[in-house]
Image (cartoon, rainbow, N blue to C red; front, side, top):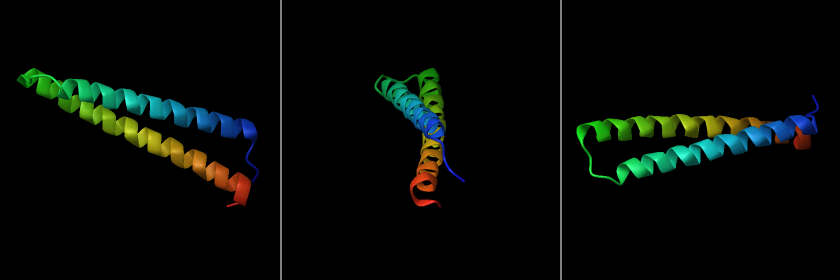
Length: 77
């Protein structure tokens, strides 16, 4: 099965977007970790941590898809 360059471009763009979203989630969590915490702020901070983890997993999945496609294109496996 041959991998089309346009497919690789789409996978690369999806990976970049996923990483950008992950970075934004990290920054959101960092901002919440940098204030004095009330109970509500702690809840928001914990929620941000869950969003960061979800974004991380999406970035890792997008990276795997892109890497697998590159392996297929260049090494046929």
